[in-house]
Image (cartoon, rainbow, N blue to C red):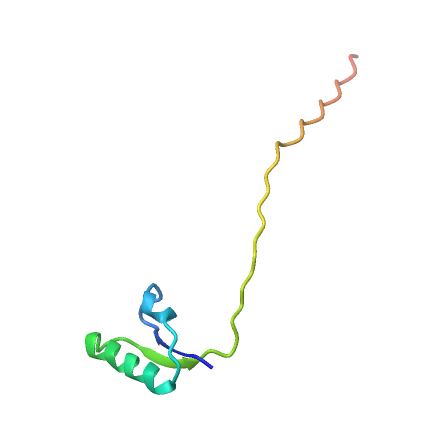
Length: 74
């Protein structure tokens, strides 16, 4: 199973998505991150499952509102 080194201090880090074949490779990457950013919080994780989803979006013209009934004239 693949491993990842995740920089928890930067969710937008593209390298968080890089997969490594061994825990040693991921560990080496985690240590590189800490060398560059000593204050970073980094972890190494094993990927157990990959999830995907599909979203369908549709649009249509709104229905015409029904006219309000007129009040009776007294």
